[in-house]
Every structure is written in structure tokens, then in C-alpha cells.
Length: 242
Image (cartoon, rainbow, N blue to C red; front, side):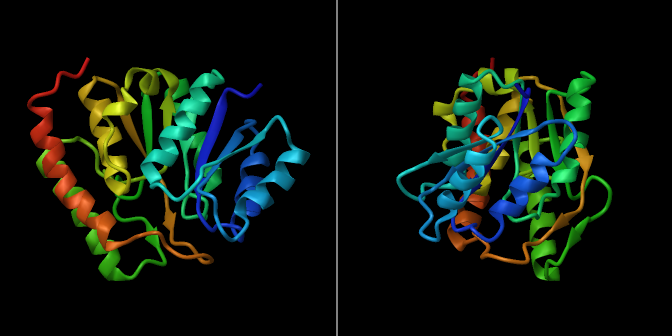
């Protein structure tokens, strides 16, 4: 059995999902895949089921009743992976904005015991973003600066969603205390791991915006991130991190 599982949340990703799964399975290090689908009306889950029949030990599917947010989808996947004793647990998008070829690079610092959590970072070496309009690049870059300023979090790409966890990190985090469901979820998980004393290393990657399917970004997600960071900082004064 593989020690590594890549958790990929999906909603209406039937165009991308067979290609992203194939790209992960073709990597030499034997990564397995867990798709957490929020009952996509475009039949994403049906596409995954067909692939899972061909690779029953490597491709897995969890279907939730409805679209309930990125954060809760990842937590569902984390619980599933922990229950099955995976040692290294990854987060990755389904739309090829994260390059599957970078998965071994995220794993390396953890296997070499330099880090407990690695982040595929767009900003650790300049700005490595492809196909984004300049307005979104600026928004994302300064959003990370805002988060670092408020939380004092020593991470350049605070909203990144391309990550690898050593299982001990997820075992120690109380998922019931993780409250955000959008992009603020990514910030909250990094902040919590850092406050608990886990080692974080950023690995430079190139982020490429999706070419098929629709972005899940919304004003509500942005609002949650902006005000959620302030709330997270405030609550941290009253919380003990083990």
C-alpha cells in the first residue's frame, strides 16, 4: 500500500478529473488519490467511479450530499486518510493549477525530516503565476502580505492550497475547532500547525490558472478570508495550542 494519498475536492470537474487522476497515477512514487465530490451535477463522481474500477487500490471516491465548502471537503478527506493509516496526506486542486509533477518535491522535505508541512508556494521566489489577470495577481499577493502582517505567520504564500502534511500534524489538530470553509480554511490550517510548533517549508512552484471549467472564487470567499484572519488572530489570544 502507498504511504501517500492526494486529496482532491471536486464540484463540476468532469472535464479535468480523468486527466488529473491519470497524471497523479503516472508519477513514479506511487501516489494514491482520494476524490471528495460534492454531488456534482455534471457527473464528476461517475467519471471517477469508472477509473476506480480500473485502479481499485489506488483511486478512491467519497461523495457528499451537497456542496458544503472547500474546508469541510478537505477535513472529510483527512479523516478518511487518517483512518486508513496514510503517512503523507496531500491537498491539490483538480484543475491543473497545481502541477502533479510537483508532488514528489513537496514530499521530499518531509521524508528528509526537514519539515512537517510543506507548501507549494507561488511567492517564495518572486511571483510564479501563469494566466491570471494582473488584478488577481495583485489581490492574491497582497492578501498574503495582509495575512502575514495580522497573524505574524512566517509563510509567504498563506492562501496556497497545494500542500503535504505529515500525518502527525493532522492527528494533532482538532478538526472541530477549524471553522472556516473557503480560502480562509487554508490560512487557518497553516496558522494552527505553526502555532502548535510544527515545521513548515515552502517549495517554489508555478501556479497555472485553469483552462477548462469554472473558478470557485466568490465575493463570499474573499470576505471570509479578510474578516476571518482578524477573527483568527483575536481568538488565538484565548486559545492554548498544544
